[in-house]
Length: 156
Image 1 (tube, helix red, strand yellow):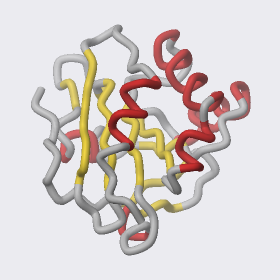
Image 2 (spheres, helix red, strand yellow; image 1 turned 30 degrees about the vertical axis):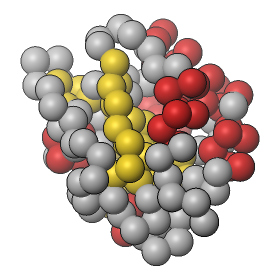
Image 3 (tube, one colour; image 1 turned 135 degrees about the vertical axis):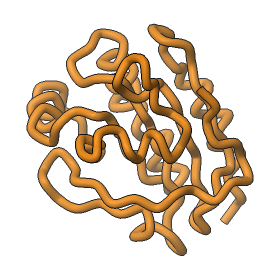
Image 4 (tube, helix red, strand yellow; image 1 turned 180 degrees about the vertical axis):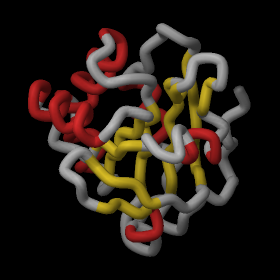
């Protein structure tokens, strides 16, 4: 797996969130930086721990003026049940069909496993990836990795 590096133009996409709303990366261009958080599967232990850490430290992203978006190959229905159970207040996007297409565009799809890797992309308001990182299967990302990655965004 080779994820897209910093300096790359972020591939456009449009996906449904866990509430069935359409979310387009282009909708944020020109106004809001975005952090894309690809994760393997809803309801899995490591993913839940990671997303709960993001939920509990959401101010980190809000204070930076960044929109946090989680993305997995789960259906919007599974993502909605999980978001409600865990009280996630940020959008969870369904890269369900074509299966993993957005994760593939970012180099974050694990073909042998059929789901996304744990990969993160910090995208500036102009649509350029300013930081990207991934962890090995089963290895969670840390809030410190997010803090460091957010520092790559240009100051407003």
